Length: 358
Image (cartoon, rainbow, N blue to C red):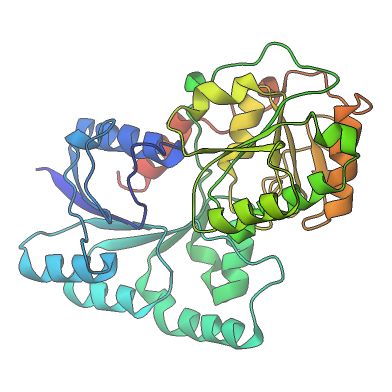
């Protein structure tokens, strides 16, 4: 008999933004079907790009995903064995409501970044209360890194430790093209991230503003991504007369083939849980310049060995790093792909999630 599971994922499906999670969803759906498991996918929207045309997607439309799922499970005679949530807030009344109408095992996956300065006192208390009240309705908590598990226990209580497990996100390694050469002086730079304040692109812009004028006339940094903070970033570039330095390229579904066109990825993020772009850059043999707190959340960057680290929000330190790299005083010669290519494969990620169901 076919086993049926539900995956509730607050992740908008966009054809011009195909990333690691899309590749995971496609392969996971395929592997589940091969193992006699049917998936009802709950996303904010329908999509047909990639393998999404093969999915059974139930979009939330104008209501929240949580409410859509509650309405669905109450109106349909379907007995799910497992319910997996991605990108949903954990330990909320939603999980209590689900347990009232379903006997399914609930698995909550924590992808949620934490603010660099930590939560306010009131929010910390609120999370602890939610942990006491609603964590009992989640059977298993999955973190995408050790950092995520540590923060989850800090948020909701150490009593959750027995129900936690780390499953690293996976990268479509074979699909990422390799850079074979690297410029020593006057290298090329890109950033690739969602454009929100916590990604720190404003710090990069301010760091470039501190560079000597001759460098500002020559340096080019391409910014891939879109998001709610784009207008503020464009305004800052204009205010600092840096239009010559930055090219806003928008979202791209071809990043796997784009990384290798650059020497360095600059990722000044304040907060991350996994950080796809840093991993993908390493796989492409592109050197990351990133933050100790955000970009190196997996602790895979060794400063000056396979990348460069700086303190989040330290604009002067970032500016000096860029200066030293531009002038060829700092450089890295190793092939960064070799150090991590077996650690974060998408096949391993799929296998680990399948093991939760079989």
